Length: 121
Image 1 (tube, helix red, strand yellow):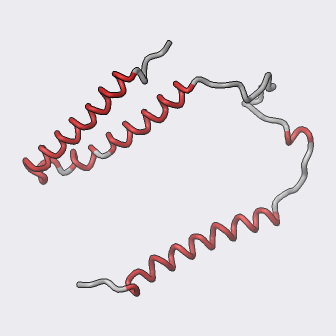
Image 2 (cartoon, rainbow, N blue to C red):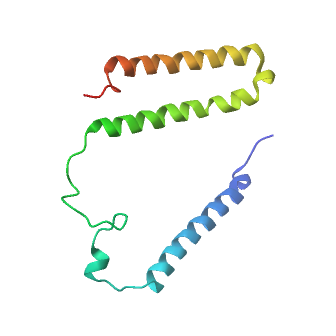
Image 3 (tube, rainbow, N blue to C red):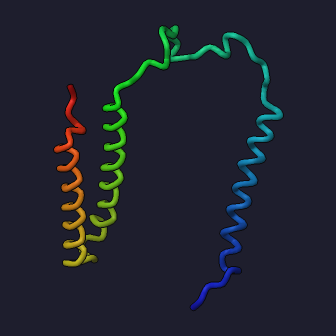
């Protein structure tokens, strides 16, 4: 069974309708929304507490590195859920593939530990 370009027409149409809806809502909210501006509105707001100091103070790269590593390893763990659900159906091949995936996962984790990405000074 071969697919043609006409088979993808509903998907393209749905994409165009969704894109059109997003653009229409943004345009309407820009045109209809309030345009009142004041010094209080332009002031930065943080949990009702008066802002102090400069917001552009440098932050240690360690925070960003830990956050990126968390997202990376979190996504890798998410790939294990479908395997756990279909564990019996995948058989020995699925088990070997998951062990190889976990092995590569642990190699990456070992590399991160050896580079000192998670050590704080």
